[in-house]
Amino acid sequence: MKRKALAAILACPFVIFLAVACALLPPAAPQIPEEPTTTEPGKSPGKAPDVKVIPEHTADNGLASAAFSTMDPYALDYLERIAEAVHTGDSRFLLSQGESWYEKRLKPNLDESSYLAYLYRIGPFSKESPADPDSIPHVSPSDIRSVRFTSWNTLGPILEIRGTFRFVDGKALPFTMNVLWKLDPPRILGLEP
Image (cartoon, rainbow, N blue to C red):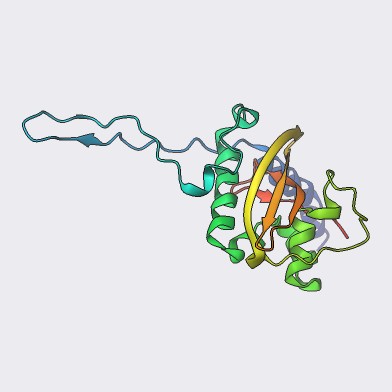
C-alpha cells in the first residue's frame, strides 16, 4: 500500500511537468499541399498563377495591415478563423474558444452574453475602454456584425490582441483578447470575474 502511494506521489510532478512542457511546445508545421496546375487548350500543364483569394470578411478585419505582418502564421490563421466565425454568425464557435479550465469554471455560471464579454474582454473589460469595469456589457454573439483587429503584443505564451467589435445597431466596443496561441488548437484566456 505504501509503495502505491509513494509511486503516485512521485508520478504526479512528472505528469504536471509533461503537461506544461507539451503546452509550451510550438505547434507542428502545417502540411503544404502540392500546388495546383492549370491546363489551357493547346498548352502544356503549368503552375497556377499565384493569386490569393481574399474572402470578403477579411478585407476590413485588419489582419492584412502592416501591424500584423510579423505575426506567426499559426496565430494569424487562428484570428482569421475568429473573423470568419464573426462574419458567418457562428456563435457556437465564438463561445467555444475559451481555455478548457476557464470555460469549465465560468461558462456554467454565466449567461451567454456575459460569458462572451468576459472571454473576449469586451467593452469595460478591454484595456482600451474608459467604461466602468464593474458593469457587464450584454453582448449577444448574434448581434456582432464585424470584427477589426488593430494591434497585438506578445506576453510570454500569450498574444494580447486588441480590436473592435461592431454590432448590428452600429455600436462599436473595444476588446482585448488573450490568446494562448501555442496550444493546439489555440484557446482564449478570458477575464476572471
